[in-house]
Length: 213
Ligand code: HEC
Image 1 (cartoon, protein in one colour):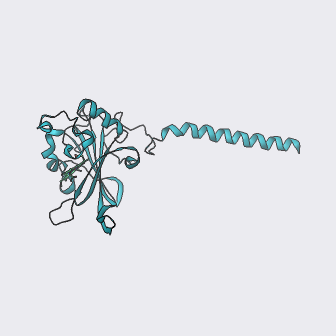
Image 2 (cartoon, rainbow, N blue to C red; image 1 turned 120 degrees about the vertical axis):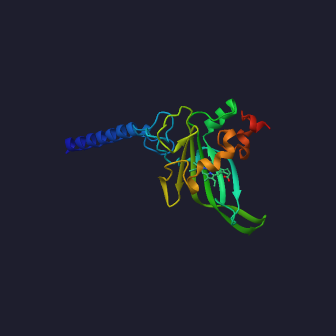
Image 3 (cartoon, rainbow, N blue to C red; image 1 turned 180 degrees about the vertical axis):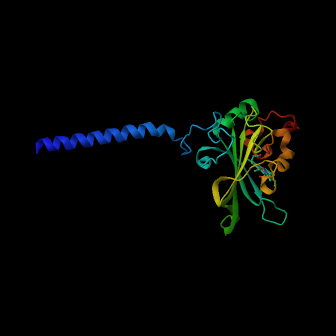
């Protein structure tokens, strides 16, 4: 009887040790964004694989810097109505403030959410509802993916839609509709293709001639 109990205890102790060892081994493979790191990831961004396929960052609202918001009213003229919130990593903000330019590997996320409104004690309040799409840009200063058409002018360009939020639907950054990243960002070419006027956290540090005028 006594011997049996000792055996039981040993088995339990062993199982706990094995389980703890296994979790300790796998824990570092999960990044802050909850992704399992994979061997095919590129070495400059955890959101880009070796072929230049971009995946959607998940934790940007919680862990990243909120750069600014745009409100595009819901009228006949609007191509992308909604509240547009733009985020980047805190480290990218820091690097931009030092150099006045986007560092290699910086990620920009623009989340578009529907516009809700209601009479509140403040007045007719408008706020952001559910996400509709996410636009993602990843800075690549080394032209790593010359044959991938979703990369151009030093950025990787990606679009994710709410109905299938982890599927990147951008095959070329010179596509049509929401995938005409090139055409729509051309006015911002002089500021590294980014509309920095909307982002006070970094705007004043910008190192572009056009932004100083
Ligand atoms: C209809 C025009 C249009 C299209 C198409 C478009 N953009 Fe933009 N984008 C803008 C404008 C204008 C802004 C800033 C103002 C706003 O959001 O209304 C912006 C802002 C952004 C931002 C925030 C950082 C910045 O540049 O200011 C990201 C990220 C972004 N776009 C990525 C993309 C990607 C990736 C694509 C293609 C898959 C794309 N955009 C297609 C017009 C467009």
